[in-house]
Image 1: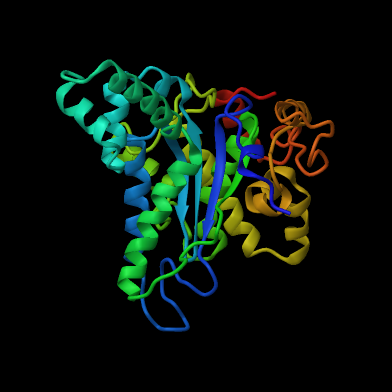
Image 2: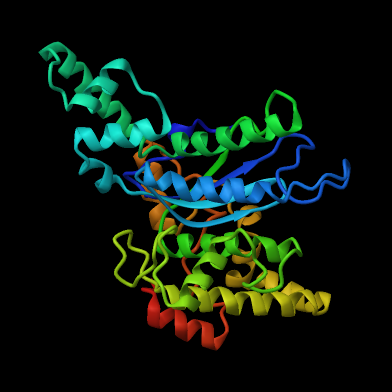
Length: 335
């Protein structure tokens, strides 16, 4: 039985979440549909552009994403403090970029509240707090993304009805190790699907955008920039993360061309298996035992859910090549 969203997302426990949206039945999001023969490759840009546009309105940052043939992955961070610092005018301005709002909020935005009665101003204040909470709500973020894509796709296909599954999947990422492992997993999606062999050919992924910005010597603006002193607590630099993913792609390519016995060794290896089979290994919140215990306490649970599935305590102490481990230790705070 599916868990209610309010029991999956709690920004007091963690601000990082892995979200996955899948198309219904045989609907094709992107790529060449082998059944109909139609090519939907152009839809990838719809998803990527909208996904990177939404943080301009929401207090939610995009750390990683991948647009696949029939599903999308994203690693999101809820910037709670940013939303709390917005004034009423800022909140309404951001909301009106996405939705019409009410007649009162439109009047308030146009005239800065001048000519409005005290009762109307109180109603606007209450509405502002509702909008503020929605602008840092992952469900509203995913709704804005998926509805936009679904409407365009249905119009193009000249049909109506559901385009996405009823709910998007969300996983709470409870500590730094879980976040980084999930980001690498998301960026490796095209490689697991066999449609990319390097970062250069990993189109419509976050790692491709980071690599392009790094090559040009510019600071990436569409995605959350990675630094060793990031406010989110993810202490790894852009160059170190790109190199870490590049090393993993090289290892992944070597594994695919190796014998079955070699692949069995990879499955036993926590780092390799976790960045390759993340969704298969971890169902629900992801973190070490301590972070999972804190997460469950936030919901008043007497039992730690998924404890046996989500042990992350030693992933980064074993399973990496020597060079990757050194690079990781230099740029990332291990536990």
